[in-house]
Image 1 (cartoon, one colour):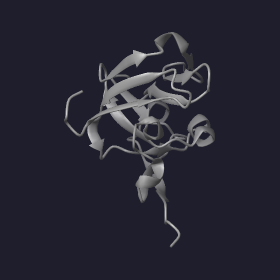
Image 2 (tube, rainbow, N blue to C red):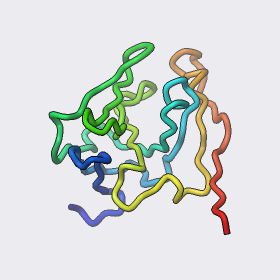
Image 3 (cartoon, rainbow, N blue to C red):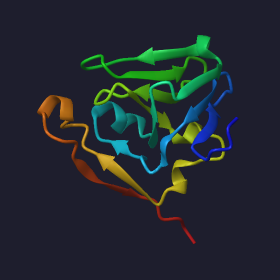
Image 4 (cartoon, helix red, strand yellow):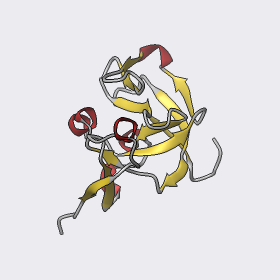
Length: 141
């Protein structure tokens, strides 16, 4: 594995799926989304460009889910159900990677996570993506 800090390994909960990802902007691109699906899923994601995710094992156990326009393709382990990544709708050349699946990373490592307005998706409105708010994690002392 490359020693670049933007290159990470990760996998699903049961270990059936393992991957290597090159994060486009490291963790500068982390975000959540308010669309109906992301709201229920609750994942914090970071971005990777097309070709930036290499499945090391378990490609045969990955399953996908598409909804609404069918453009975004969400990938899950068919054994443990963990969402690992998805191809984005607003830019199909980007993948969003679940940071909780990255080795040594937790969504609670980030004190502030931008939340994007996916209810009013840019592809539906023709307007630039709007920031809906900020999710904050304040650790107990």
